[in-house]
Image 1 (cartoon, rainbow, N blue to C red):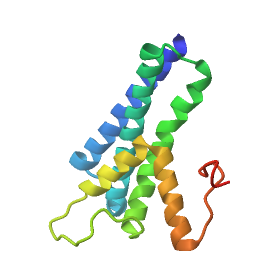
Image 2 (image 1 turned 90 degrees about the horizontal axis):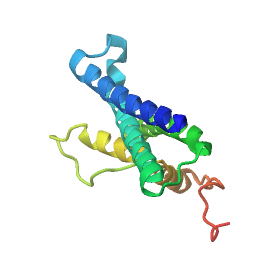
Image 3 (image 1 turned 120 degrees about the vertical axis):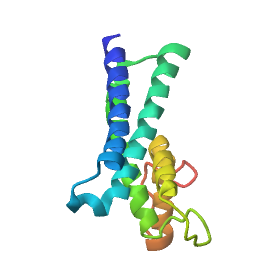
Image 4 (image 1 turned 135 degrees about the vertical axis):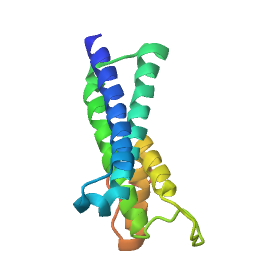
Length: 155
């Protein structure tokens, strides 16, 4: 049961750290050399928030609802939010490069909220996001999907 408490505390601290990071970037600001990557950093943090929330939901579902908490999953609970941060940052890179598109038209009044929303979703659902990125890589560059992403029918 100690691991359940540790994992829960870790995930809550992780989400709070991501929220504080967003607050610090938006209110306090960044040092001059990092201003150019502000939106990417915010997107990475939004991905981390999405991943942390997903993992917190998994904790209460597995520990309380299903009553199936297993310590063997502890590494997943620790690593998964970190992967979500990376996916949030990658989502920004793919949007900025034009490989993923949020809307069909160009708007002069658009903001970065689309970047942050996609980053949050990328962090929330890492598996589907990685599958989508592999679809883009296959369509654009002809790169085959990884074995982990292929379904039984595709193998």
